[in-house]
Length: 235
Image (tube, rainbow, N blue to C red; front, top):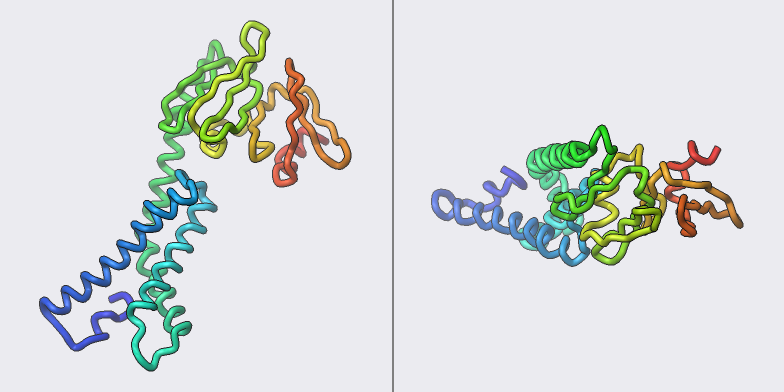
């Protein structure tokens, strides 16, 4: 069993079942605290792949730390015991988390397919979903200018009747970045996603790259982290 917990005490039957149940309850409590308290505290609603991997490692470390504090016995140095707990916790958790990772991948794949299914081959519409993946706005791809973060909403900026209009949709740029086709829109800043079809020009000013949007006076910066994604559009 994990941590050889069945050998830690000379018990059996009901007593051993209660002790092992306590071990499981601690593990479940740590995961529940991580998923329902810490994620809410840090405002984490959905994970991208890299973020998910880091969060899994964090949960494994947290679980090993808590179990080390609770089950450490006299004569045992804490940190070597913690490293042993970390090793076993990784082995125990890897299977359910691998399954979770596959589920996340399938869900994201379905989300992309659902959004793309809203594209019309005739009018070339793009569907903009809310946080529940319900499409709230469908507009021609060529009319979409850019997305801008607005607290818990995303401001969709687009052209309608030759005027720039804005509609707020409850979602995050992170979600839209995952769901929408990267060949059409691309993240350029923590607060902006721009429609590649409506980039008028990209200029370099004082070492910074700026995007000028068609049919608008708006100038959008490209953050250093996102410059590599725009190299094919700048050179």
